Image (cartoon, rainbow over all chains, first blue to last red; front, top):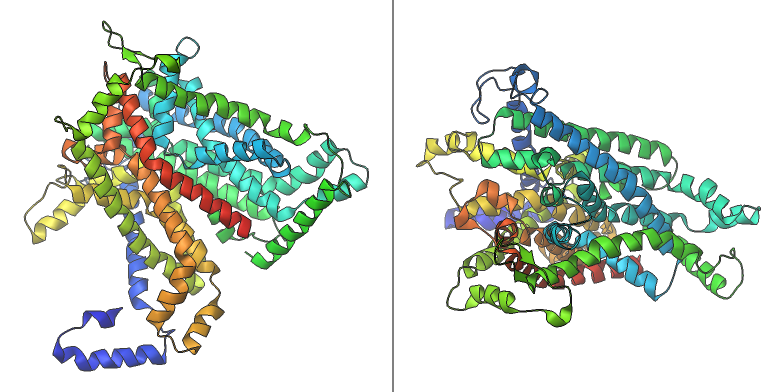
Length: 305
Length: 318
């Protein structure tokens, strides 16, 4: 790429030399791309790191460093993350929503994936299409639609709040297990189950004792992905939160960022960060353990999920 | 991924399916057996995915309660009124064009941000797929990690850096006049969108570039193509599906985005998503919010269907 930059006459000689060396060794180190990649990684991760560091700021500012303290984690009696009742409630709300979503969305999505893998026909194709549509639809549209439904059509049945937030999250997250489990189903094929049934297993037994163990890496990966993504969700959860008590951390960050945030917000974001990272790392380790000796058990394939 | 193996396996499966259909081999299942697995999911989607859309239509084509200014949805399609929908649309093109600016802005911001995502993302994915060498796993982990950091936190982190006493402003003011980056600067919002959504571009590109057979590139070079020609005539066509998929997958959520602008911009940079998020909670603006949501749906439906068709084709090819 660098040879394009040189244009004036004095640079003509080095330019030719660069050209030549480029032809002689086209597999030389690509310094230009390397620079871009390193620059990109710094650009993408450094701001987050700085935000984490600022949760330990001693002053009220989230942008000017005033010394180290735990004031915004535990120290401050009213405004710190673990002692402000508002933020504590939000923290519990975040994990309550994420856990409930996992409990509902993973079995629903997994069963759907198994069923749709074996059921062929027009209704099956439409159902699959609908499910994938919910996967790519901008969250904004789903959020507004659900908000209008729960406040208009079903306003006598449900109130905005935790229950409704879980329903909305499950709708949005259900397609992750579908995609992950389906990919795994395609790669293991039906032979193991057929072998089990040839050996006398009933269909239900072959599913429980052959298929589900084979699917366990994919199910584990879905659990990790759905949990992490539910913790980070903002759009749906905000539209469907009722009173301030049902607002999770992501919504609190949003509201605070538009008003006057203190480093307690950074602490809240850090908690979310470590929760999702922990779940993803544990999920990955279990995934690797369960899929040992099978193809696609490397970081790359987990990342592709 | 060993793609040859998966192809062989799926071929084997197709044969088995043919056997099953012909009544040979495989186990016998009642007709309802496999559909029953999908039933909970289908019911769930019917109530929580299709019904909400119907409500949006009913609200958009309904009325406003005159006293309390709450929406009065009309659930019978034969009584639908298109008055509010029409007035809303007129705000885009007729005498009172207050929505035209945000709409144009949305398209401009999304186009710029997607193209920057593509150029930057391609370079990074290309490096990670072809040259990362022993750092491959590390780079991959670092590339994936933004996925698991809350979007809000990432934008909040930038907001902190860009405030008038933040580090970026400090560094900037050494070289030039101080600028308030958060006072409705299009550059800030566009770069915020790029920052937020570029991971969704890099991963498909990486997957696609990683699958390109090195022999093809060497063959291109052996046959006398320059590196640039090899890139243009071998690498680029082979990664074209991923480029298009990446463009769709980053631009779809950008069209509905409102929080990036809420944190990094002002009303001078508001987009379609901002209009929706403001009207949806506004008194007497329910039908208008519904109408704007329909506009947003119309904008995203073509790229969305394109993406679904392409992923289906890719799955069939594999």
